[in-house]
Image (tube, rainbow, N blue to C red; front, side):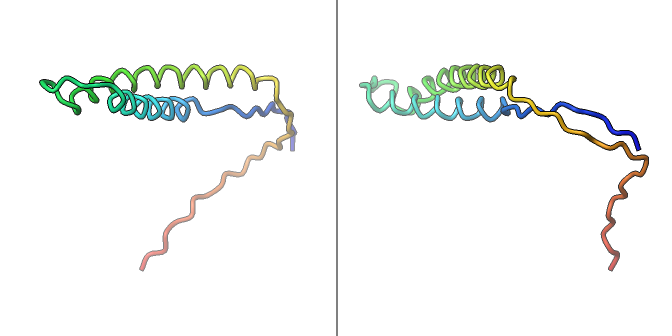
Length: 98
């Protein structure tokens, strides 16, 4: 059976960084809301909602940029593996009928 060389590279998952950045942005928005005086006519929750929208968006973007930066930085860590091509297909296991 023929063997082929393939390149293996571990890459960070960008979505994980983006979601983490968004959560951190919402937490920062909560801290800013509690730390600053709020207008009594508006209230705390609408102020938090306003800051949370911007915190979510900015955190999402910054988390994505961190993920892309780490992806670019780790591109040099590659490995080469040999795979063997086969003609056989794996069959799916079926649930037994009761």
